[in-house]
Amino acid sequence: MEPQSSSFSTAKTLVRIVTYFLLFLAGDLVNSIVFDQLFSLVKFQNASFYVILRMLGCTFVTAFLFWLYTNKALHLKMSDFKITWNIQGWGILLSTLLPAFVVIVFLAIGKAETHMPAPSESVFIIIASMITALKAGVLEEMLFRGFIMTLLERRWNQYAAILAPSLLFGLAHIPSMEYFTIAGVLLLVISGTLVGVMFSLAAYKGNSISNGALMHAVWNFVMVTDILHITTAEGAYGNPICSIIIPSDNIWLTGGGFGVEASLIAVTGYALVCAFLTFKKEPSIKRLP
Figure 1 (cartoon, helix red, strand yellow):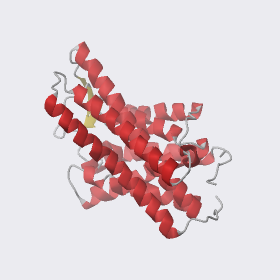
Figure 2 (spheres, rainbow, N blue to C red):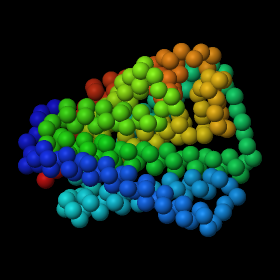
Figure 3 (tube, rainbow, N blue to C red):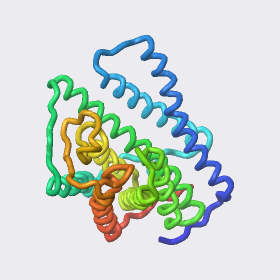
C-alpha cells in the first residue's frame, strides 16, 4: 500500500467527511419526520409495515442526499468512491460462511429454540428483516468504506484509509450498547474496529463496496434482526423466529453490553475473514481524478 499524493487539503478532506456524516444523519432524520406524520394518519394492522416503509424510505432518501452532494457539489461520480455493483463469488462465499461459522459454534455450546408465528406474519418479519439489514449494510458501507475511506486514502494513504474509518465505525456503535462496562466498551471497540478492517479489505479486494455491503447485510439479517437472537436466558428479549440460549454469561461469549457480535467467537470469525482477504490478490484500484 503506497501513499497517494492529493490536491485535497486536510481541512477540505475533513469538511467533506463531516458533510457526508451529517448527510447520513439527515437522511434518517428527514425520513423519521415524514413517516411519523404519515403513521399518525395511516394505521397498519401489521407492525412490520412500519419497519418496511421506514427502512426503504431512509435508504432512498440518504442515498439520494449522498448522490446529490457527490454529483452536484463535488462534481464527482459515485463510482469514484467505489460505490458500484461488483459482487464477486468470494463475496457471496464469505457472506455465507461468516455468520454460519458463528451460528454453528454457538449451537455447539447452546440450546436452539424456535418460535414460528402465523405464516403471513413470518413472511412480513422476514421481509422487514431483509430490508432493515440491507439499509444498514448499504448505507453504512457507502459512508465508511465508500466516502470516508476514499477521501482519507486520497489525502494520505491506504493504511490511514483502512484504520481511521474502522476505528470510527467501532466507536459509532457504542451508543447502541444496552449497558456499559469498561471491559464491554473495550471489547466492542476492538471487535468493531476489526469488522471495519474486514469490510475495508473487502472494498479494496473487489474495488467496490458491494461485496462488503453484501457481507454486512447478510450478517445483520442473521445476527441482528428478529430472525435469530443469541443470548442467555436472562438476557432474552423480543420474539425472534429462532433463538440460541447460551449457558454462560461470560463476557467473552456474550460480548458484554453490545451482544454476541462483540464476542470472542465473532471476533475469531472476523479475524479469519481478514486473513483470507489480506492474502487475496488485490486488483488495480481506480483513483479519484
